[in-house]
Image 1: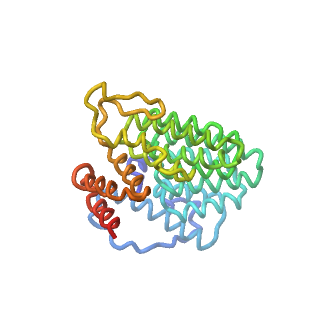
Image 2 (image 1 turned 120 degrees about the vertical axis):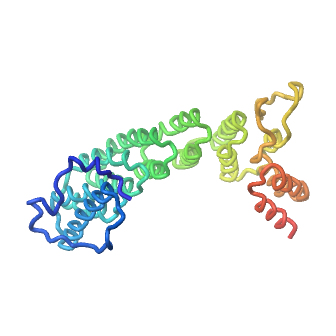
Image 3 (image 1 turned 90 degrees about the vertical axis):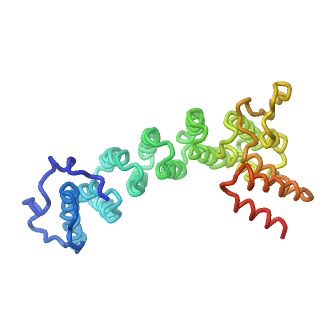
Length: 347
């Protein structure tokens, strides 16, 4: 469906079929059937899109490379930002004309915010940055730094947009410059301070901590592991039923090949029923417990504890009992899954 409304077209230029400078082009129409049962507003938008794409097919057929093709593709993209062929032909035209790619990025700043969830706009930015890097590697780093600032602005609009996060990670990996990487962990922690359930931020934290920055061997892996476990425990203590933090804890242990049982003492605090009195609370700085208002037992902790028992050998019955409690009481939504786990354990 078009992202443009009749109000957007009210002051627009003529249709391409009415423009004198396009009279030398014979449009190539596509049969779309009979347009019926459409409101006037929708019909105007549809006709504008049809007019532009008829001329687009014509320039593709003739393989025209010109400034007016850039205007045509921009108009089509504004009408339909998911039009992949228009994006591809636009990029090809930009490169062939040796156009100002910085100016193209400035235009993409507008379109990326307007069409934030459209994959094509982010892919186009990636192509432009790659082309800039090929032309001038040193100057492209400045462009990459500016791009990080723009991505941050885009994430302020939608902190969990998959395309934006994927593009940010590509940018970091492609340029792989220390100056670009150094602000990533503080940025992620800022996002998690605002919303500890931001799964995208947790995913990016894993990418930053266990990706390029920690892979060069210059950092003590043991200290990094201790720090990440301590940080994650603190976040779980503040929001015990946050699956993102529990999944991060699992990921950290799996990545470093540490057994889940290494955090069993901590997990048990959240797998137990809520404590009744202050006397039940034992302060352990290495294993911060849940607050007095925490909803316990925590489903993620129960699952974690069952996995610990299953891996231990000889503790299978304890794991099955936990799965039964999840199926019948604590996590009915996934009842079939827990029943599968129980059945699988008995075979």
